[in-house]
Amino acid sequence: MIKSLKATGHQLANPAFQLTVLSREEADSQHLPRFHAKLRGAGLFPLTPVAPAVLQINVGKMCNQVCKHCHVDAGPDRKEIMTRATMQLCLHALAQSNIPTVDLTGGAPEMNPDFRWFVEQISQLGRQVLVRCNLTIIVANKKYHDLPEFFKKHGVEVVSSLPFYSAAKTDSQRGDGVFEDSIKALKMLNAVGYGQEGSGLVLNLVYNPAGAFLPGSQKGLQDQFKKVLLKDHGLVFNELFAITNLPVSRYLDYLIESGNYAGYMDKLVNAFNPVAAAGVMCRTTISVGWDGGLYDCDFNQMLDLYVASPVQHIRHFDAAALSRRAIVVNQHCYGCTAGAGSSCGGATV
Image 1 (cartoon, rainbow, N blue to C red):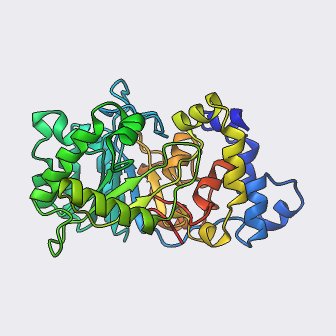
Image 2: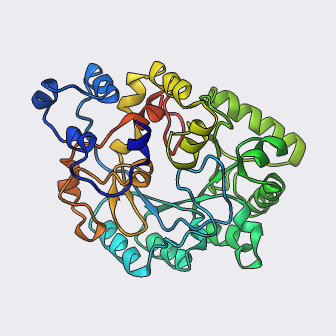
């Protein structure tokens, strides 16, 4: 199991990959991995997509932070960066589709040298742009200080990582001084209108658990964050997304090294929720890697689990063909289907 989660490379001979593209009748005659069996019991195997609502694009793995739970294994030393030529292919695919939202992620997406150009081009296509910002990038260097104004100009929805409303918990997960810099960045975003009632400028926060446990009630956490951040720092925001940590990359390493892997997987399996499974984000999302490869979600992207379709690169984008695929799943998918569910937009239930 651990070996399969750490595997890299596009291996069509991988049994777990092949199993996802079997018909229901063929699957019934074979021994299914546990997650596949759970889906079958819920009447959801094979898991299939609905009309795509989000094109999520990873524009590079370079980041100014090295977070302990990062499933991308992002950091300052990563060289994988999406080129403008690949961005052009993404724009061409968007122009041919009705996908309304583009979700830009990384790494720190703002570190891609063509980031601003890309946002401008997407905006010109009339699509909503969402940027996953780690906050500290805004104050890291003078060349990023105007990002709040840039985001405002293009009506960008900002989704910002903030593990907790205290320095100790935030810094333990993301590095020393991150909480202080994050508060500075949030104040800069608030100053141009983000999170302010009636501004139309959306600022959402993301909470990830700091240990081997599931997030608590998203509504309860949101109420706590809003109360403390307003009282202690005068900060406001729109919504908080509680996202479960998936056993991938650095978080998987943490689970193994701390001896929590088996226990954490048991928690996820025991908390499987068929309602959450029906609403997983991979059903409405197409994920694009920094090199243009296509995946069902950002997590599958980090595991090199390409879409189960003849269309596996953005240059060949075909919405109709992709709609006929079966979604590639494996044991890490329990993270998105546990409890209230988890997605890039928080709980699914």
